[in-house]
Each structure stands twice: as structure tokens, then as C-alpha cells.
Image (cartoon, rainbow, N blue to C red; front, top):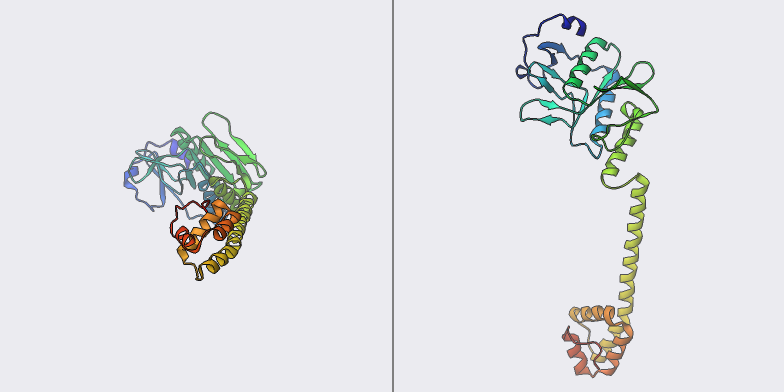
Length: 281
């Protein structure tokens, strides 16, 4: 289809005549029918979107998002990253796009699509091959096509913060693992184990704080008993709070001196006045 179109003059259609959901792309005014996705690509498309969209540096990503390359050319890559818009229906550019090529792929049409995207400023077109050995073809405007095999990684400096394992673009478990890695990295964690370590440390710190609080309460109990015996009444909650605060600043020994050295009237006044120096006696 792509070779035949080279012999034709520009077609009659324009991008502003298409509506969201129309099953067509446009190439130089000629409609390109976008058939329903078969089983080869249906699952991987979603996996690829999840992996790319979750990268910490990515602002947005879209599945089958229309990119108006010119007034009569509109392409909708399987996944597009960091789409730019000018307020219209269609995006105007994307620096990174991902295409899945499965059984029945029209290779001539794919080649035309890649060429149009690169000519419009797309920096990388990744083609995930789902037939034969799994691999990704990396297309750029300035370099020959590079093939990254199934155990390799893909990078897009300036667009993606983290490398993308090829397996993550088509294997469900690898995609989920990579997506989780991306989400953790966006929140400052290098791995799930790092998150677990932080959670354990926070738990230990919480336990230490609870232990300190329990220690303060245990230290307060005998002092409360002494004060209540000297005053021959139960302490109010405000008086308990005064003791609790001064236990932290003066320590139990000094408060013990106060309860023994002050007379009943002075002791009651000391409890009422929160600014009273605990060292007086």
C-alpha cells in the first residue's frame, strides 16, 4: 500500500475531517484503515503503555493517540510518549512512539508510517516484533536501524528516566515488575526492598517512641501517687500534665525533692502555676 501511494498524487482528505474514534489514519491525504488489533498485539499494547507511562520522567502517554503531522497526514502509533498539543483535537508531536508488529503486518505501510513520524520530529520509533525471535527495532532519523534482542534494554535519553527491558514490552510479569520499579523510583525508592527497609525502620522508630512514652508514664505514676498523698486528693488532668511536662524537663529526682520539700499550700500553688520553677523549694 505504501509503495502504491508513492505513485499517487496527494489524496483529498484532511486531518480536520477525521473525528476521534474514526478507524483511519491519513498519509498525504490518503486513508489508511486501522483494523482491529489481533491477539498478538492486544495484550502487549496495554503492557507497553503501562511501562512507558509509569516512567518517572514521562508527562503523559497515549494509546492510539492521533498525531497530526501535517494538514493531510495523521498517524496513531500504538503507544506515544509525551504528546504535545496545540489545543486542537489531535496531538502535534511525540518524541517516542512504540509500534507492535504481529502477524499480517503490512510492512510497506509500516515503513511509510515510520518515515513520516521521523520526518515530523519523532526522535525514536520502537517497533516491537511479535513474530519470530522477539526483538525491538530502534528507528531514528540520524542512524541506521538498530536491533535490540529480547534480553536487552532500551533507552530514550531526555524522554525516559529509566531503561526499558525488551521483555517488559510483551511479557506480563516483566511489564508489571518494570511498572512497579518505575512507580517506586518516582517516589524515591530504588526497589521494593528499599521500601520495605524504610517501612521496617519507621516501625522500629514508632516502637521506640511508644517505648519512650510508656517509660514517661511509668516514671510519672509514682510521682502522681506522692503528690496525691501529700495533697490528700486526686490530681486533676491539668495538674497531671504539669507533672508530665516537668518530668521531661527536670527529671524524676528533682520532682521528688519538690513534693517532699514544699508544704501543702505551696505544692498546690506550684501545680497550678505552669511557669513556676521546679527548682524552687
